[in-house]
Image 1 (cartoon, rainbow, N blue to C red):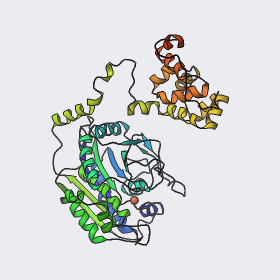
Image 2 (cartoon, rainbow, N blue to C red):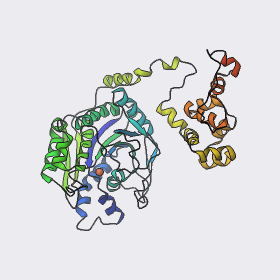
Image 3 (tube, protein in one colour):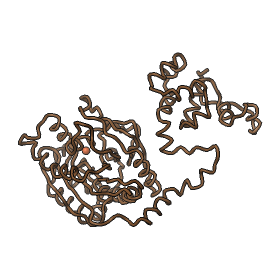
Amino acid sequence: MARIIGGLAVSHTPTIGFAVDHDKQQEAAWAPIFQSFEPIRTWLQANQPDVLFYIFNDHVTSFFFDHYSAFTLGVDDHYGVADEGGNPRDLPAVGGHAALSRHIGQSLMADEFDMSFFRDKPLDHGFFSPMSALLPCAEGWPVQIVPLQVGVLQLPIPTARRCYKLGQALRRAIESYPEDLKVAIVATGGVSHQVHGERCGFNNPDWDAQFIELLVNDPQQLTEMTLAEYATLGGMEGAEVITWLIMRGALSATVERKHQSYYLPSMTGIATLLLENLDQGVPAPVSERHRQHMQHQLAGIEQLTGTYPYTLERSAQGYRLNKFLHRLIEPQWRERFLAEPEALYEEAGLDEAERDLLRRRDWRGLIHHGVIFFVLEKLGAVLGVSNLDIYAAMRGQSLDDFMKTRNQQVRYSVAGKASR
Ligand code: FE
């Protein structure tokens, strides 16, 4: 079974990444940051977690306001470095434990947390700034990750209480994963700072110390606080520190504090904290019951022949082809698809099986492959094939035979007026 070996929290200011990239670890202004990270580096090296469950917030880099979500779980098998305006940092992509991500996603949804899921998105300094100070990466990162992006920039955002409860659900999720994995929970962000408006530059070291004391010993108290109270005490952007409650919620009620430090060089209090659980994992029957609870909504669905629930597994399997077909919503892409399909297959890196399915317009085979129907109807619109033709083909019937099963003999597609 997977088990949580500890929780750590670190600030994620871009200064940390800057200091790493410019070899400033030994300079007087920067050295305290790295000294404060050192015990955590040593702990990571000694304990060798297989996976870091890594809680961070993006800074309007990969997650913009055209679709902003509260709790977004990465389900990819690798994550690259984002370009935040001056080219990406020279760091390798980090591997993702996609199977654990899917398990956690399913578990959290079963526990009524309405998650979003992401892939194909690079991560910004919220993730890589502390990551590059915690672990060596010259020969590739020594761990896999499961990233959780928390949307804390556009209000309304989750409450402190919701973050803590998510952490408690996260513990159930991780401890019910059947593979033997050592998982450490990483929280990043905070502590006190404000980077906008006339109050810009606000800090409150006393509150930072009090917050960490409460986080370790009495986290329930922190769940009672409003966002305005967090902003009053720790600055508006400092309120992102509520994400530390996710980490704390995933640990046992009592914890041992292995390391703590604080340094305020410029705009943001840079705090580090390392906690270990003081209890054992949950008894095996409890985990087994939780796994059954996770399966409850889909129990029996395998008996529906000719039905392919679009799970995260299917989504991962069909992603490349779905992405290719989704781009048919772009006029230029569909023009090129009609004019030079083979060149487009090549450009999109489709494998031979995927190309073959498209060449043969194998609607049923595409579904089996993991393609979702709603990009097939886009393909139909581009090709001048009606939805009814696609339905008939998926059932292995002629259009006429399929039409006989409908009340009205109508044909339609999602194509607009100017299409073929
Ligand atoms: Fe931040």
